[in-house]
Length: 384
Image (cartoon, rainbow, N blue to C red; front, side, top):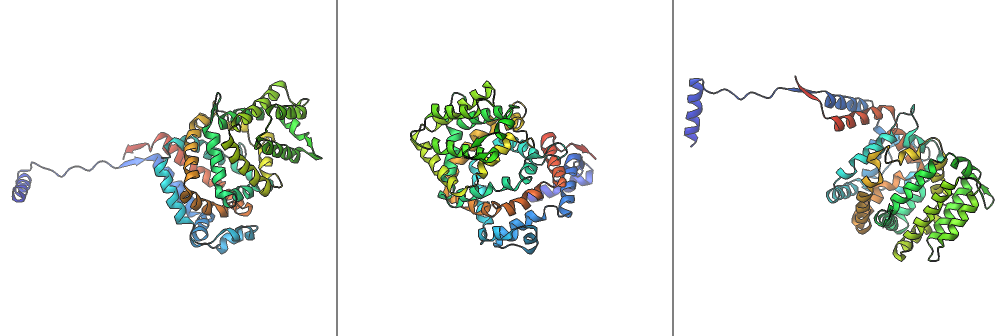
């Protein structure tokens, strides 16, 4: 057979009947070239070098590099939360999660959120700028870290997320219903004045709001939670400060919360979350961040949560995938614990400030937009 093949090739060449197959013409892929070019430029300028130092040696070797230490305003915040190889176990956990939950369903909403996070500050602050604008906002990472490392190693929090994304009401999942009402409140032009003038237990404004949220959280975690009483409490606080439409939204919020926690299992999980928050968030950082989201003008919460404005970030697009992911993380401690260990050092205000500052670099915005344009419109290849 080999002799026949060789003879055929020789004969064809002698007779001039065959030619070497023509190579496909080289293509000039404009968008791909641009994305690669701006990415290389950013890497050459070492814009993202701090992120590299966070991966290795911080997560891989378990130590703070001297260059990274200089960038941290309080390295002593971070040092207790590093040690050993946390990178490879977390990478294995992420790969298994991606196998269990393919990322396609989250691609569109992630794109919207990432673009919002790195938005040009000449337009507005974006999510990163919003967080970096206040030390009080960055402090929210402390109770979150405690939730992952102290309070059931993150299981109650993951289960609470699974509950909120999985339980269905007439308006949708609990989380979707809550987000809809919060977005409506954030769009009320009178909400700013109402919250600024809030007084509770001798505290005013942001602090008073934190106390109010803490009271509602504690009450909702109890078997005897009285929805009507909670509605009356909020109406007494805001009756002269908000229009009827917003008061009705507050009523609906309490109704949603009451229905969700009528179930003993969901309420028991929520009690663990509330107990942990009370213990590790005495300054009400979580409630304060929510206050800034609703009250502040730096970030348009109503627009961010508006499914008509951002169809890809609509709760209908990402809540179901988030529910499935939260269920897996709740059940699989072999995946949850490596991820907790990897994010633990980042959940300190000092490290979070460096990470967010690095990710908010203007050069990175150019890279993000170049790659998203490539994904949206293709590489735009033309024959050379």
